[in-house]
Length: 353
Ligand SMILES: Nc1ncnc2c1ncn2[C@@H]1O[C@H](COP(=O)(O)OP(=O)(O)O)[C@@H](O)[C@H]1O
Ligand SMILES: [Mg+2]
Image (cartoon, rainbow, N blue to C red; front, top):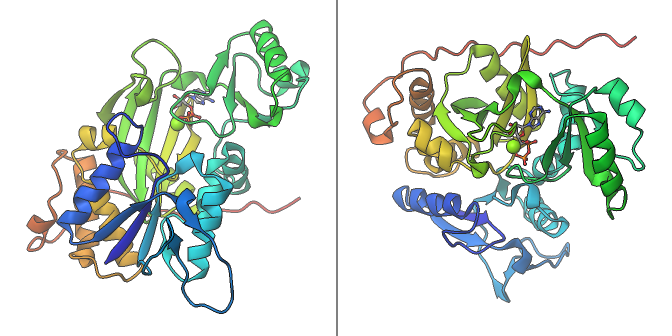
C-alpha cells in the first residue's frame, strides 16, 4: 500500500507533533506500507477536467497513493484544504476528510455541529468587540474561559476569574486585528485542571487517559506539563466520544471531555491528535491501529488489516483491563473476548416546536 502523510513542518525532535510523524514512519515500515511524508504547501495544484490524475510536488509528478493521512490539525490552512480536496476529488481515500478537518479546526464550528446534535457542550459565545460584559455575565457567569478559535496545545486559553479581569482582557483584545477569532465560554468548574482524552478510531473508542494539571492551573494539556494516566472511561463517556467523532465525521479523533457536576461536557475534538502521552500511558501503538483501521475501512491491502477487530478489541481490553500492549501477531490465533462497551444507542431527536 502507498500512503501519504501531510505535515507542514520539519521532522525534528524539537518540533511539536514531529514525534507522531516519526511513529507513523516506524509503523509503516513494520506493516510494509510505503509512506511519504509531504508538505501540502509544496504541491502545485493544476485543476483540469482532462486528466484523471494530477499530482505535482516540488516540480515532480507523484504516483497516486491509496490513502492520505493529514496531520496538520488546527493549523490547516486554506491551501492545505484545497490540496486535500484536489486528491479527494481524484478518488484518494483521506482520513480524516477535508470537510471533517475543516470543521474541527474551528472550535466554534465544532460546537455548532455538536449543539445541533444535542450533545453536551459548554455554553459558548463568539467574541465581538467591544464586548458586551452584561451579556457574558448573564449567559455564562464568572469565571469565564476565553479561548482562541483555532488555538492548540493550551496556548490560547485563559481563565478570567471576575468581571474586572474580563473587562481588562476584552479591552486588550478590542484592539486585536481579528476580534472574532475568540470565544467566551462557560467555565466547567468541576473539571478544573482535569479532563479526559479519548482516542476514537473508525467509530471505536480505543484508548483513554486522564490528564491533570500539575501547576494548580485549570488547563490540563500535557504540552503544558499536565500528567497523563490510563483511564477506564465509564460506558457513557466512551459512547459520548464515539458520538462526537460520528457527528464530526472523523475517522481518527482525539476527543477531550470535561467533567461536569452531573455528567460531561465536550471540550474539543482534534483531527490530528498528539499521542505521545497516550501511547506512554496506555501502552498502545496508535499508528498501527490507524493503518489497520483505515486498511479495513477503505479496503486497502494492509498486512493484517482484516485483524482490525481483534487489534481494536485488544486495545479496548487494555483500556478496560490490564493495560497490556496489544500485539497484532499474537492475536492471529486468538479470538477476542466481548467488549465491555455498551452499544451506542441511536441518538434521540427532539421534536421541533
Ligand atoms: N470551558 C472550560 N472549562 C474548564 N476547563 C476548560 C474549559 N475549556 C478548556 N479547559 C481546559 O483548558 C484546556 C485547553 O483547552 P482547549 O479548548 O482544549 O484548547 P487547546 O486546543 O489549546 O488544547 C483543556 O484541556 C481543559 O483542561
Ligand atoms: Mg485541547
